[in-house]
Image 1 (cartoon, rainbow, N blue to C red):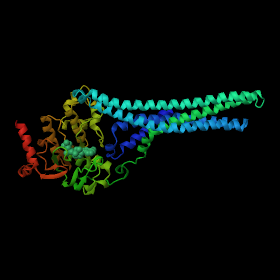
Image 2 (image 1 turned 180 degrees about the vertical axis):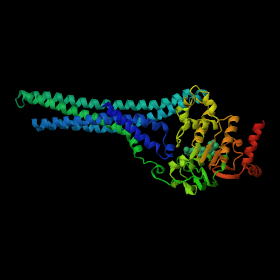
Image 3 (image 1 turned 180 degrees about the horizontal axis):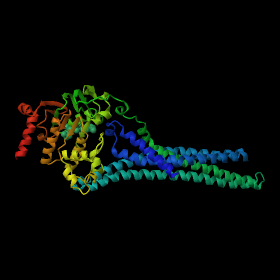
Length: 501
Ligand SMILES: Nc1ncnc2c1ncn2[C@@H]1O[C@H](COP(=O)(O)OP(=O)(O)OP(=O)(O)O)[C@@H](O)[C@H]1O
């Protein structure tokens, strides 16, 4: 039985996890990660309890109750009717109680998920919480949800108490009435002692069967309340991009075009983030995107990676609209270093090999690490490339170098780097910059897009796109933009002044 139940939990969690993983990325703008992980754990457990326990209890007791009714009917139909009436009253009370319990269960799950969100957020930002001394406030925030949870639990217990009280009062009073009136009937010889004993016994069977069925039903309702969202999630279809088999080109060249692309995030549909962008990147070019914070640089990359769809306009790669290309194939040809340099809880080698579509050996991994200027620090670790790491073990710069090595190892046609050197010291930045620009001189065609705040990283780019408020305001190489004396020249001057002082 337990094995069966564990298998059910496993299968449910697998299905739910797969549904979440193949959702449109904008889904994560609406749902909180804590809520989803709570659904994966507690809700699936609860639902599988229904399948493993409640259903078989309901079935068993329904058979027992039916047997008791048949025996009561054989004994005397007025007696059977009176027993059925008691069961009908019990069912009516249960209907009201069941509805209440279902609502309480949903609230319990929601409050638990909110408490989990706060805990997850606080623990993942524990350093900020400690340095800013906000432990007490965070405790209060968590406690607020726990108090709501406690309030609901108390109400649930009170409801349960009323239900048990109604059941016991009805059942015991039935027994008392049966013994008093049945005893009088036995004395006046209208009923035999055997009939009375049978009545009391079958009545007990029937009422207890009804009680167990309603109790299991109540647990079932609780789980249904808690699991409504699981079913809603599991009913979601995978995102279009994973369903449709798109075009796979014989050879990707890396010619990128943005044609009149506008975009707003689903979570903020009234706020345009990109406004009619038009530009193209030729194969083998290095393009840099610069601009003030919040100007839409990372969003542009999100669209190119097809993590979101443009609200209007079109992105083409090698002349084919992005939507028509096979997304898995396309992403295999892209190397991506994201702004957040988190790494997986795996050994360093697996982190570098992560998602690499080619067959590779230790030599390839080391070569990529050398190019990313990561080999020396990895070799100095006691277990070298086999060292098990997580987000807390390595410095920001070390994690960033592992992310760069991962992108280099894929040997991609399109290399996308969102702030690849933000956490690096000047020496590492210099070497990595050299490597990224050296790609250009290889025989293989490779298009590189770099977003950077440090203008030293982008000076050598073939073209620099300057963004402001979701629009492209300047375009050209470093020298042209300096002559133009616009935003780029201003930013360049600021950074030069900072270096001098
Ligand atoms: N998931 C999201 N949901 C809603 N709005 C978002 C989301 N991500 C970003 N934004 C908003 O979109 C705008 C552009 O953000 P984006 O991250 O593209 O800017 P950026 O130029 O890359 O900034 P930075 O240089 O600081 O990384 C910002 O106003 C931001 O608040």
